[in-house]
Image (cartoon, rainbow, N blue to C red; front, side, top):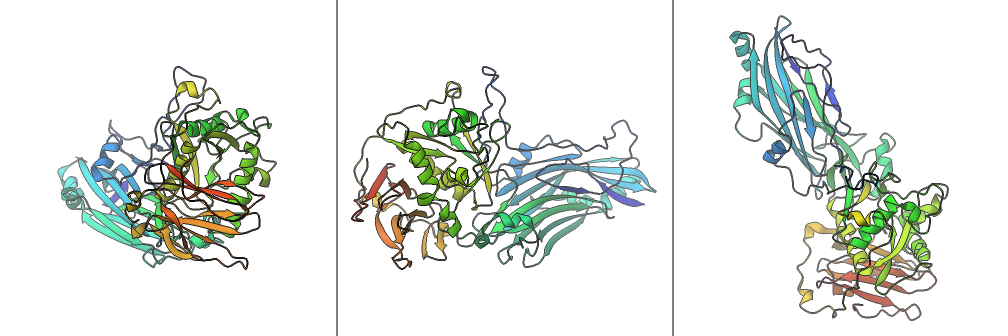
Length: 569
């Protein structure tokens, strides 16, 4: 007598599968197909609109899960998974849900004699603020079939083992080891009678894991060295009394990025990253992104460039896009400053806006964003590629709100510099706004008073959300990050939001050293944004959003170096 576990699972891009190479023989009328079946879970697309069948399809709503999966939610989401396949969620970097239906088969003298069909639910959680992950496996919904009762009894007494394993790639470790495993072995009857939610449970700690060796794993080459990125795999294996088993794998990435928090975090690495831009929140900004992705030939300044494309859109929804964007980290890596802010993306985009008409209250907006490597300066560095950029004037309040939300999205999704690729997807764009490149105009926001004492009473930022730049010291909001500016004479200045929500700045002296963090005044509910860069002088304009929801500005006189007080426009 032998025992064999058999599962026919889907091949899925984001979850590699390993299964025993054995044949399933069952000549009964309800025999299962021995082929491979499954369901692919990509970013959720929307169908073509019936009233505009020839226009580009719009993604209808974001599939971006904020809360961890619960056992019941997971099962409700995938309640109709057919036997011999599985489905997996792809809407969160920090929580995963998988549901699989498989069969445990008992053979007597090489002949199948009894079967147990059951459901496997796998819940896995990582966290953006620590380097630990948890994985639990629950087996339920048992359904038995047998040829005789004796074989059925033997089936119930057979052992079934669940292994949850974490391995590190090219020098990385889990729990300080190259491989860490938690194992649960029970008889089938015991598995079937477990009433709790945790049949098998494991926690793995990558806090002390070394960085993955980029010479041995090419994935590590894409990230900033200081982020100490390590790659891992978390596997769940269900095994019968012989070696036949089924395994599902999920890649995991951990890091120690100081600009996101002080201890690092872990994410399920293959979940698509999409920044959803809602037309209802900032219509002019969303319209600009839409036109850049869907109508690049109608954009400025490269609309007439042969074969022009503008990156960041999701294929096939955006027929002329497909190239993803990558984040720039200001000041964290010296190389990034050469392509950012005062010396690259903003200068080039502001120059391009110089030939456009501007109305009161408008600002020059660029897409792709200046916080990406694919911003305006990408064209200068890669002149022979078709990937270009677009600029236009849009309402300044909308421009600032979108920029602040982007910073928050970087933080909440744990987006690393250089290595993390992401898409930008506008949605809720009305059909009558999709076929023209003329931006919608709205009236400028009314003026407001300066920051009041009452507004200064904002709650402090939690310590878990504070970061430290190893070269500059101090603690500041990870969500709002660092805002750098390089003046024409090479002088550098950086702003942050401190734990007390006040604005602080730090700038370089003539000998190259930094002054240290100094109060800059004001209480902010957003990161600092440099909105004017005079590359031929020493002037600058910055803004933050106050607790009144309006943007407040300070301008630096290019001749005297004196800053104005905070004020609204």
